[in-house]
Length: 222
Ligand SMILES: Nc1ncnc2c1ncn2[C@@H]1O[C@H](COP(=O)(O)OP(=O)(O)O)[C@@H](O)[C@H]1O
Ligand SMILES: [Mg+2]
Image (cartoon, protein in one colour):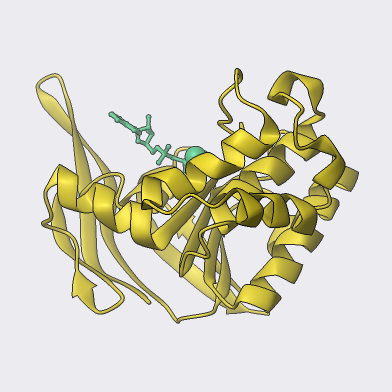
């Protein structure tokens, strides 16, 4: 599903350059659920943004579903994201003026297939059918994250990416979110890659990839 070969990412920093990823090699199989762990600043978000076609590498090759996507234009990358990838963020990134249901519908709008019935069904599956008309400010952090999970899953994308999805939640709510993600991953059988700081959260995954200083340091099968 995901194959990174010798990926580097360099940011210009005035006269110098900051080498954030320094030759990353990674293979994630279709249907796997994988955690990325590593110290703050080690390049985890940069790596996930590349995997999510939000950015392109400075060098190296990235194959998503066997297709090389490391040299695509902005427009082509947006199309790959819309069709193939669901995103879940630490801060939920819901639109504040829209209801929970309308936020979930947005996930489908970008992919070009709006279906309110399906959006309601997605809210049901994260246990929020009673909250469909609530705005994000009227929901708890855990509920907002469930809306964002429904938004990511509603188009049934082959790949789900989550950057510290439990980072803003207390440990009990974090566990609830992980149960939902694990359950949905089992049902839908998509590939899920998530970043987390917490070992307890990473344990829900099948494999942990440890990143240090912009490289894969070691991997552990669970
Ligand atoms: N757009 C950017 N421009 C310049 N430097 C960046 C940019 N994004 C991230 N960085 C730097 O790259 C390093 C890795 O960042 P990041 O990938 O966010 O790490 P992590 O998610 O592991 O905490 C940090 O030193 C950060 O300051
Ligand atoms: Mg990060």
